[in-house]
Structures are given as C-alpha cells and as structure tokens.
Amino acid sequence: MRICSFLPSATEIVYALGLGDALYGVSHECDYPSEARRKPRIVRSRFETADRSSAEIHRLVADSVSRGEPIYEVDLEVMTQARPDLVITQELCDVCAVSAEDVRHAVASLDPVPRVVSLDPASLGDVLRDIETVGEIVGRVERARELTGDLQRRIDTVRSMVSDAGASEAGSRPRVACIEWLDPLIVAGHWIPEMVAFAGGTDGLAEPGAPSRTIDMDELAGYAPEVLILMPCGMDVSRGVEEFSRLRNLEDWRDLPAVRNGRVYAVDAGSLFSRSGPRLVDGLEVMARVVHPDAFPGPPAEEAARRVGALSAG
Image (cartoon, rainbow, N blue to C red; front, side, top):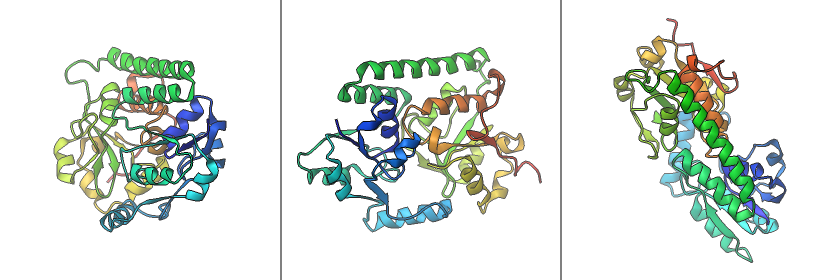
C-alpha cells in the first residue's frame, strides 16, 4: 500500500505501525520521527511563520480566511508521482492543516482515485480508535491493538497515580488554564480538557471535546488559574517562552494565582499536545507532573516543560 499523509499525527501513527516505508508523501509539518523529514512534501504553507509573533501569524491567517484564500497548498505534481492508494487527512481544523475540501479536490485528479480517510478525534479515546482504524485499513490490526493497549495502560497509570495522591478529594484539583494561543488569547479545547482531568486538575475554561475558543484577560483573571500551561499551537518550549515574553500586556498577568505561586509552565505543544497522535500520552504524563508534582518521582524534562519565572519577580 502506498500512503500519503496530510497531517503530522497521521504520519506518526503510520510510523508507529511499522509502515514508514509505505509513506510516499507527507505534509510540510511532518517531522517525527526524523525519517519523515526526508519524505516528499505534498503540502506547503503559503507563508512563513518562524520569525513572526503570535499576533502577526493570527493576522496573516485571518486575512487569508477573510479573502477566501487557502492557508496551505497541495503540490499536485508530487501527489501524482506518489500514486497513493490511501490518503489520510482531517476536518478538525483548517488552520492547523490543509482543508479536507482541498484534499478531496486534489485526489479527484488522480487516476485511480485513492481512498481518503479523515481522522477527527475529540478525545484521547478517539485518538486510540483512530490508531486502530488505520491499523485495520493497512493490515496491521495486531500491531495497532498492541500500541493502543500500551497507551491505555499508561493513561490508566497516570490517573491512578494522581488519584493515589488525593486528586479525587474535594479541593485537591487545582484550577488549570491551558493557553493554546497568546495573542489573541485562546484556551485549548478538543482533547486538552480531558487530559487536564486525567492529570488531576480542573479546566473551567473549556469543555471536553469542544473546539478551542477565544477569551479575554478579564475572563482568565476571573477564573484565577492556579496552574497556567502555555501551549501555543505547534510551538516548542523555547518558542512558547519567547512568545509569552513578547506580550504587550504582561503586567495584566501578574495577579493570577499561578503567576504569584510560580506555577506557570511552557510546554512542547508541537510534539506533545497539538497533534492528535500517540505522543499525546507523553503529553499527559508531562501535564500530570506539572499539575501534581508530588505524585511523581521527578519533574518533566526541560525540553518537554519549563517553569516560566519571569513574571514572579517584580
């Protein structure tokens, strides 16, 4: 089977099932495992974001959407050369990846037309089911079940450890805010609120399974988060810290309980939280160590999560 993947999480799933050699095209953001970077690129972004602030990226995206212009482009020449039997895409977010409509338009020009599968999870359970769905399609059912079984055991272990630490008792679950974008301020939805619950926290700003949403500083202050997790979509720890330091309203953050108590963390969102693949469970383990550090033997690795202390002084 020849496979093309239009999203990084699908690429990770294909590799986890032992079918990296069957990938003949990936998106421009598919960078894990490292072998994926050498695959032909079937998607490219219409603008560069590496040196732009959160506010600048938001304006570019908003302007493109208002003009009815795509954010990403499909390389039809590379797609034709790939001759895929299976194309994996998504309909969850047209900002995070190429739209399903553009994918369908692209594959319609191929002969023969490949099978198109859309992965649109809203929870960790959905992610595990997506892995098994792909496993069934590509003939790796047993491998998919082994993988999801291992991931489920790790999820259960986290929930058990935070429960043993007393996180099930009233008042023991800290208020957690997960910030998916910094300018404008967007709280993370989809699978993130469920992850917060599994990690022993309470997310009062987002509904499990619901889309991410924009809030203002007054709503964040009114919620008074005790733990603040910065996870700008697609960014690593260093980039998240940098984006936070660029904010023009940093003074407004100082009175938040999380800031006063030194419980602000930047995490590797691009690897562990933004992508709906197997590494979300790694992200859950990192989040649990941030929310309930006393329940685990050590802090998360610096490249996974870093305490942001710049606002604590002054």
